Image (cartoon, rainbow, N blue to C red):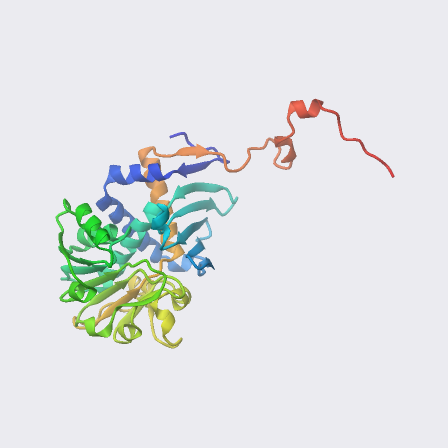
Length: 358
């Protein structure tokens, strides 16, 4: 890898990020991403935070997710288009940038489609470590699409889950998931319905894609001590949990102003109490307080996690020598002479402009 100059940007393509994951292994990447996310949540107050900026359409949403700690600025471009499969495209596609706050120079430009799946699963585990029962062994996984394997492996490798009970309205998605998890050591059980999958599960993860106000989990499915990891409800008009599921639980979120608008929380009154997860991680609030209580992590994804993902990828790429230096901004001898970059010698020898006085 060529070391970028001060005006060059380290670029990680989709193939580069795949190479990083293959070299380190999925389990190690999940572990490293979870550690990076937790470390950044522990310095929550260092960050200038805001909800993401979204542009909605009938078919999906395109979003920008910015955050800065005063030294480094990060943003992610990400879409969510549930019908993309018919065009041979992923439902979620993303890229991100790290920039130096002092100069504005983009330090890193990276793919984030694969990395987002890893960071989302890692965040699920960061929350579950303080919200789920310590002896949790079985997880129901509702929605078996592109992010499902990462969720399953994160809970297996980082939280000790040994059995995954899976269901998707599309049997082909469940088959794909089971094939991909064959050699992982996980016991994977295909179920006939959401209710069948959830029965007896210690943790329930919902990661469905449809942009609709769905009620994937209903109050009659709740069992004492259950932890619900609601991942798929992540924009206005897109939910997975019946409002009474939230009312029956203690609810935790990433960034309350964003989750009130985008999460399953959007259907509840503004005064409904929730706890931001950073407060639990920092010891300022309690996570699970009783074995029998029901907890919900209403996860919508937050820009801080993308900052963590980008800095983790950047560190891995430099260590492994992956990526290339590209020129996103012009290198100028005289920074005030931008026109000089397009004013070649040949152009200089061409007829000059004539000043006409009226």
